[in-house]
Image 1 (cartoon, rainbow, N blue to C red):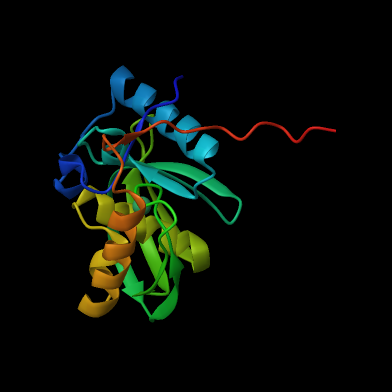
Image 2 (cartoon, helix red, strand yellow):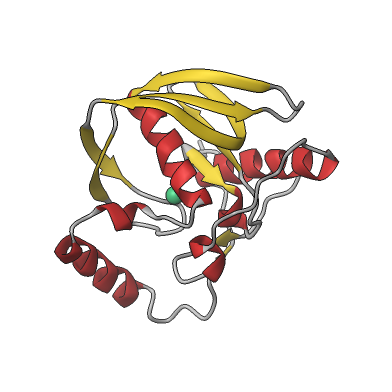
Length: 178
Ligand code: NI
């Protein structure tokens, strides 16, 4: 397993539609493991493959005590509507209220090639939908009003004006010292 670099807002791969995987091979298994490791180090609740520069339909989620990979995920059912604050590891320190369906049924492939279904509500449903968006090149900012989006983008650009790269090394937080 290895910790991968995160792609930040501005990296073209975040705006790409990622390609279907089909039957997972060893490379996909490795990708899933790297996604988990990088998500954990960054303390995220989800991470999509294009956020580490790989435009394939693979993402991981760890929310509401459920931890799973999603390969070629689709949402079969969705209902209700609820708003909550979201952030994204690719847009650090920017948060916005996003409205999404409240309950969903996901269908996806796991790393062993098995197709599975999962019903989700709450944070888990939100994380799944946020990651699926990534696979289509959509960011949570796109769900906000134009005005709100422009304010947040202006703030982000101000805070990142000195960045020389779209890549960010994840800094795992060290264990608290005595
Ligand atoms: Ni995200």
